[in-house]
Image (cartoon, rainbow, N blue to C red; front, side, top):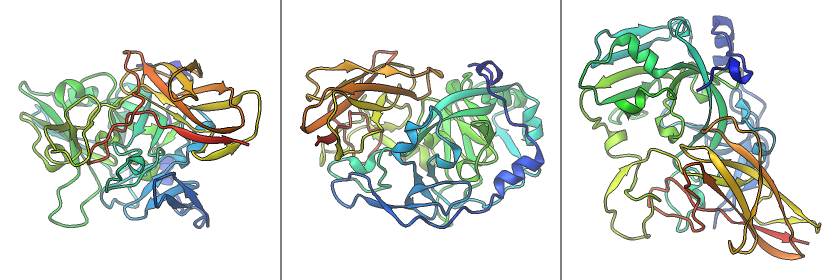
Length: 406
């Protein structure tokens, strides 16, 4: 993992002034009075809003706790998703203001020396940065057929950022992990709205927690984390779904046995096969926790059902990511996958980052279905058919885009 400086970025200074300004930013303008069609089989219309702190126009999925989706057109503009357009997903209510001078990260459990670390303490550790896609495990849930209960995301519950902070393993080294540790559990400042509900806590296997790529981050695209994206600290687990990326991080607990908490043992589970696939109505069968993302390519410059003018070549562009490996290639098809043409890949910001792609298809007048698929550097390619499971997790197949040339 490269440092921020070697990639041409500067890590934001951890000053009380800048961080308080980030946390207490005033709400933006009033809600936008328009709706967008997310392309669901039914009830796909959603309003957009500008009413949330530090956010521009977002697709409103839920107000409290907020679920805000990024419009696909945003991904056309840059390799890194702007902070003010980055998707938001919370399970529970959270503080609307955090004083960074008072915030502490508690490290305890199966360690030699329990700690209470300030942001200044963390800033004394080696600072690093990594580009990584943050994607909700339910991204695309609203597009499944049959439809599935839960947050009805289209494909905008994701974003790509340069995350800046310190390695989790360096934080754990300060505390001294004892022999026999098997997992590390993380919690944040969000609290259940109902007293009997379990705290939102997730854990990583100890071996994964001690890799170089897992961060305790305070920065995002050269700025402090926005409040809605986890200010002042969040966990960053590149290649894994965002359920593990705990926001407003305030506790790290090393465990000497498996985490049997609700959010690990009973929630965020998927069928135990590589595609997280099962038949609607079939018995649940064996299930395993949602962990690593799969490769995906998503067309962003043409909305599903759009009309395009006739031209020699119809431009097709979008974003691709390889899950827990880099993007090797992206291919385009307009004949149901019988033939494919390669797309040109944009800059490579690292194995966990978006790579934008651009290509063209010769489409005569009439109706067509455009397909984009990616293959990662481990040789894993998107399947042409879509998987399905009763939780709507880990959508992995190619999303066809219907277009009319007229």
